[in-house]
Amino acid sequence: MIRRFRQYLAPKSVPDARPAVPPGERVYAIGDIHGRLDLFDALIAAIEADDNARGPAETTVILLGDLVDRGPDSAGVIAAARAWGQRRKVRVIAGNHEEMFLESFERIEVLRHFLRYGGRETLLSYPLDRADYQSLTLEQLQERMREAVPEDDLTFLREAEDAIVVGDYLFVHAGIRPGVPLDAQRVSDLRWIRDSFIDDARDHGHVVVHGHTITEAVEEMPNRIGIDTGAFASGRLTALGLEGTERWYLAARDANARAQDQAA
Image (cartoon, helix red, strand yellow):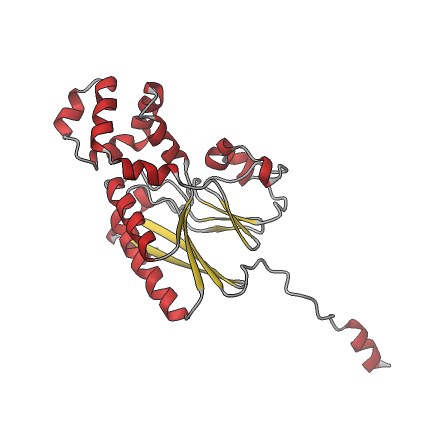
């Protein structure tokens, strides 16, 4: 009787319900870079080493957007992303800062907004004289931008994607509008949404991997994973690795971030 009772209570074998990427695939997602070429270069090296150590797989790197603004070398970040994409599969998601950057070439009101939120640093990472920058009107600056920023860089950003699905994971820049099917999501929400997504605990059908909202450390929730650790200010750039049902994290840190980690 006791044996039968124990057998009755024993858990039944059920399929693994943890989120997964398809067999044979490996994914790395990188949070908001914001012009920190130093950290991006370090994280590229870390991902290459990690990928090689894990053995053969069909590996995809996903950049979650906001490559530009705030940090000192947005032009360098774009060049590095383009070069990396020549060596391996790199997919880029458009963030709200890419949206502002591209629209600022045509709309003065967007250019004004763009400059207030890190666009000045982006423009000065191109061949644009700092002294000249200070003296230009917005209209003159718009003309100078068209001369200074290579069309290949703009094409690269225009070709960025809005959302990427791999297995049970959905990769976007900012998040999604809860309760709205993926094919009905507005681009503005994918690039700009914040609290109404962050505060929503419901199942979204996929685990949403996103940046846009800065947190001190990775924010891993049942329905989403936030990996924007504020590289431009914190000195910490984070990547998420996925294979099968496994998750792991890689980070590049500057000297200030390393000192803070040691002091914590």
